[in-house]
Amino acid sequence: MLDQSLLDAVKSYSANMTRPVDFVLGQGEHSKRAELIDFLEKIASTSDKIRFDKNQTDANLSAISFKIVYDDKDSGIVFSGIPGGHEFSSLILAILHAGGHTLKLDEEIQNLIKRIQKPLKFQTFVSLSCHNCPEVVQALNQFAILNDDIENEMIDGGVFPELVAQKNIQGVPAVFLNGEPFLNGKVDTARIIDKLQSQFPDLLSSQAQEQLPNQDVTVIGGGPAGSAAAIYTARKGLKVALVADRIGGQVKDTQDIENLISVPLTNGNQLASNLSTHIHSYDIAVKEHVSVQNIDEVDGGYQVTLNTGASWLSRTLIIATGAKWRKLGVKGEEENIGQGVAYCPHCDGPFFKGKPVAVIGGGNSGVEAALDLSGIVQHVTVIEFGDSLRADKVLVDKVIAKDNIDIIKSAATQEVVAKDGKVVGLIYQDRTTGENKSLDLSAVFVQIGLVPNSDVVKNLVQTNKQGEIIINAKCQTNKQGIFACGDVTDVPFKQINIAMGEGSKAGLSAFEYLMLNS
Image 1 (cartoon, rainbow, N blue to C red):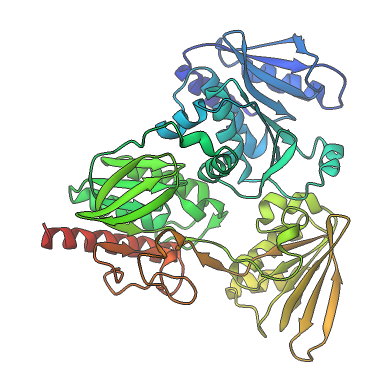
Image 2 (cartoon, rainbow, N blue to C red; image 1 turned 180 degrees about the vertical axis):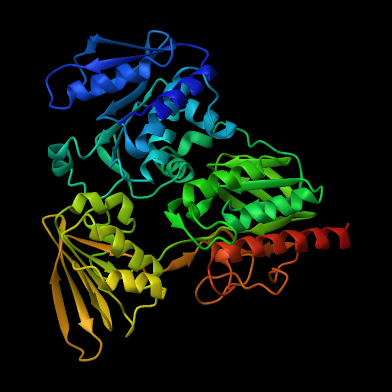
């Protein structure tokens, strides 16, 4: 599991620690306990700042769990299972942060978390193949570091099947708070904060809103479009703020990327990392892991207020908030999310190993999902509304060649059927005959396109019936000083290359506007 290159990386990272940390193992017997001990011993061997004594145990932890301790106190961070796969990065960051390395959370978020005075015990169920899970684990681990009343336990669902069954978990990440369901599916730090604020409305009550310096441009959104807009405006010497729940946006949910011009092959995490590096090479005020609460039109521009209470005046706005997965809107979908209805095949596919599933949607995303799932599940049925698959030919050829993938065309999904809290089937209408038919299956993966995230400006700018922001050739909206770009707009063809170009154009248009109105 741990090759020498990973251990060398841990050794290098540990140089950033200012205090030692200890791994403390749980008690008991487990078939994987020896593997866990070996795993922890190898990590501890990389640095004298990382310590592990297998004889030092905690009776409150399971035989396959360990906690992180620093300065003789619990960090509040527990890993139940062996954090390999995507969760290895969560472990490394937990070690670094417990070891005194600077947290990456926005300062206003840190202040919010420090003010919580209620015991919060999070349990975050993950699968090691889930690329959305680490972001949640890492955020909650940082919360635990910041506040002694907060704990977070990462639980590998593959190691604790009985607990997964008991809590009826069929999708990850699944977050429980004080024993009760809290959040499910892909969530970012901003969404966690929003949910905490809804449960604890007094979080902001005693905190005066911080007034930040005035900005020439505020870019809302950190995907390819927003990143390009921020870089282009910063290059012009403008005072620029970038607000994003996460740098990279929806790109981070993408696996292989083969159509980014000049880059034959990359992946979402790498591209997001490159975008972040490029952004931080300029003097841009980056507000990450937060969300915009209000935008008010005022003299001189627009007042932007975040969910942390921070606020500032911006002469112009560039909206690059992207889009989210479109839902089916049929009976049984909403109530079964996380119980067999899923939107991420990489995250939730392992829960349905050896079982039949359906993928709704025959575009590139749907066909790619079917191909990914075909290597895990027993059988995949692709349900396509139209009379032909809309995916690229190279993908269609691959899916046709798979023995365990069937394709049903001209089919309209009518209902997701569940029994005893689990999806057991799907009802669809044959659009050629009008007849309703059923499929027995264990999960439905929805891949039918995107819905624009335009709510933040829905009362400010004009949108079409799909909710897309209407823009002209210069990315201008109908509101003076507000520009928009990327998947949130009515620009055709939602592609990374196009989003980057539109973001660049929006940035240049904002600069032109400011020069003409200075």
